[in-house]
Every structure is written in C-alpha cells, then in structure tokens.
Image (cartoon, rainbow over all chains, first blue to last red; front, side):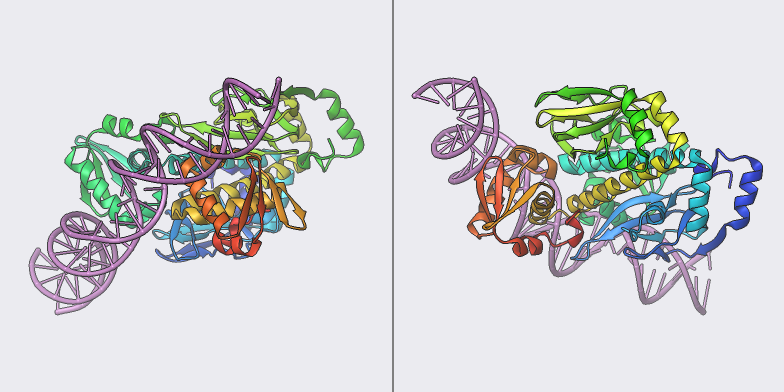
Length: 228
Length: 228
DNA sequence: CGGACCATTGATAATTGTCAAAATTCGTGG
DNA sequence: CCACGAATTTTGACAATTATCAATGGTCCG
C-alpha cells in the first residue's frame, strides 16, 4: 500500500480504511488482466511483477505501449469517462494486483483532491514518455531508439556489477522489437553489431550486460530518451 | 470562457470570478508561445486559432506532437510538478490565449475537484491519441497513417460540400510529413497516388477535397485512427 | 507582377522488412 | 545433473519501402 505513489498523500488511518475495501487478484505469467475493448469497473494497481500493455493492429502486429511495474496503475480513464480499455494488459511474470471499484474511486478522488493531482502528475510522466517515444519513432533512427531503450532499461531494470550494468530484461527480444516498432530480426542484427563494437554483451535471452555506458549515451543521441 | 471544457463545471459566478484573474495575450502566426525547456508559470488556454506543439531532435528534425485548437490547454504539468516544458508551441495562425497563474490554478483545482477530473479526462483523450499515433508509427504502414490523418482532419477541420468533404489543413505538407514522421517528398508522392486513384483532390496548399471517404476508411485500416 | 516560399518529380542510395534455415537457449522430466 | 524437445534467437539472401539530393514547377501575397 505505502508503495503506491498516488496514495502517498493519505495518512495511516485513511490508508487502512482503503486497504479494507480493496480487492486482490493474482495472475500467472502470460495471463491477461484486461483485454482491449473491455469495459473496466475498477482501478487496477500493480503490487508485484511487471505487465505489458499493448495493442494489436488489424494485421496482427503487436505494439507495446507500456511496461507497468510495482506501484503503477491503469484503468483510471475508464472509471472517469465511459471509455472501454484502449489496450490489452498481460502479465510478464506472476503478478499481484489490488483493485479499487469505480464508486470507491470516485468517492476517494472527490474527498482527496490531492489524489487527483497525483494522478495528473503520473499521467504527465506517461505522456512525456509517449511523446518521447513518438518522437523517437518519428525521426526514425533505429540505432537511437535501441540505445535509448537500453539506457531506459538500465535505469529501470539494471543492477551494477564490477563488469558493468546488467539489465534483467522484462521483455523477450521479440517484445523489445515490438516496443520499438521494428522487426525482431533487425533488433538481433543491431544488437549483434553493438556487441561486436564492445558496447554490450548478450548474457542470455533475459539479460544484457552494458560494457560501454557512455557509448550508448552517444548512440541514443537525444538525452531526453534517458528516462527516469 | 464558456467554450473551455475544463471549466464547464463552474457556475456563472465562479466563471466571472475567474475571468477577472485571467490574463490575455495574442500571438501572430509563426510566433512561439513557449519553448521546449522553458519554465512555465501559467496554464495556457487557447481561445482562438490553432497552434502546433513539437520537439526538435538533435539532428534538427521536427516531430509534431499535437495540434491544439480552441478550448485546448497546455502547461498543466509544469504547474503541478517542477518540470519544464517538454515541447515548443508555435502559432499556426493569429492566436488568442488566456492564462491562469500557477497559484490561481492550484487554488482552483483544490476548490473544485471536478476540474481535476476534467483535466484527467482530457489528458486521457490525449493519451489515447498518442497511443494510437505510436501504434501507427510502430506498425509502420505509411499508407495507413496518411489515410488516418486525412480522416482525422476531415472530422476536425473539414466542411461538407456537394463534391465531398473539404479539409482546411492546419499544417503545410511539410508539417503533415513532420507529424507523420515521414519525408515531405514521400507524402507528396503518396498524396499524388491517392489523387490518381480518385480518393482525394488537392485543391491548393491549404486544402484537400475528399472524394472517396469510404476508400480512405479502408486505407486507414485501423478504425481507432478515426478520432473524434 | 515578381519574388519568396512551398510542393512535386526523378534518380539513386540506404535502410529495414520478409522468408527460410540454422543455431542457441530454456525448461522439463528422467 | 543431464538430455531432449520446444521455443526463441540469430543469420543469410533478397525484396520492398522510404530517404536523400537535386532540379523543376506551382502557389501565395505584397
């Protein structure tokens, strides 16, 4: 509970009251939390594990929009307007969630305007990320984008080691390609190239070692890509 | 005032009080309202005219993120967090704005939680647009994207005529290309192709006639591209 | 009417996607 | 702990798409 940023302005008593009315649900890896087009009736908060949010195009290609981790939430739009879900959310690992019903959420948000402000801030963060991603895709330099995502993941999923930063990838290579909007094979080739240039080292399908951080920074080009 | 959606939940008296504390400013075509990186001290609401919000990449390419029109606002992020502007905003025509200072905005939002909810909803709309745009770029079918933007503009900037829908473009061809993340020349060629297929007719640099709406819909592919 | 700006066209190069096959990695069961 | 089959990733060859550069043609507005 205390790890959820949007609820952090509440005091102990309020938190306790809310924790009483939250419902919980766990998901196995690969399970779908919500489907694009579903009608949502609650705000979902991730307590443990990562999920991916994505859309399918009509020709069956997957575009990953977000990786949500511990403390992230989704579904707020669907509670405030009568919109249905605009993306599918799938567990990348075993995931624990808690859910706040529509009416509870609306009560809460009117009682604590701070929560609305926190949500606006968090949505702002996401918009900045989307805007950066859109720019990356628009200016279309694939090398930049790969550098950018490696740096982003280094910060988000990396651990320091004597050899460099080891990234524990939340996504498969195919997933990363779907996030970047490129073909799996292209990503393979580019990563191979980076490895032969000594910037990274592919440990296995789930982790990459960054051996030349500065090199990646200059590859990424746009410093804004290095997201918090 | 009454045309600003986020303030629509206020009553006459409140609106009057706010209109007293708003400051106004007009801009000529081509003038910049805010620069990427600027520190913002007020919420800006567009009263008249269109503006484009864009980012430059390090190699000088422009990526347009939004076209804001009458009733739209920006700068809310910069008032709630200490973030600086994440894009540049430039007038596409003579533009009239009004501005609400940071402190006034914060007072207002705490007094009227409904406004926060309205802002969340509006941000949600923008996120859905960004998500769709990201998907369009990711799945990378340029024809789809062109069809999509023509339909979007038809709804937003079009007028019905006996011959079809005439779109009064807010952007030059170059601007549209920068919005779609493609080269100006590519857009030219694609539009020429659409014209020879009888789907559109280029009237002049600032307007396009849609002669085969259904054709465009099937070109666009993804029905979600057809935004409100 | 003229000049600046914007858009189109052509030729070519560069990049990335696609399909097919080989190699590697992963997880499970013995 | 090892081996095996499935899944994932890498590699290769080639095709398709789009960017780039350069030149031409049009449009807009004083």
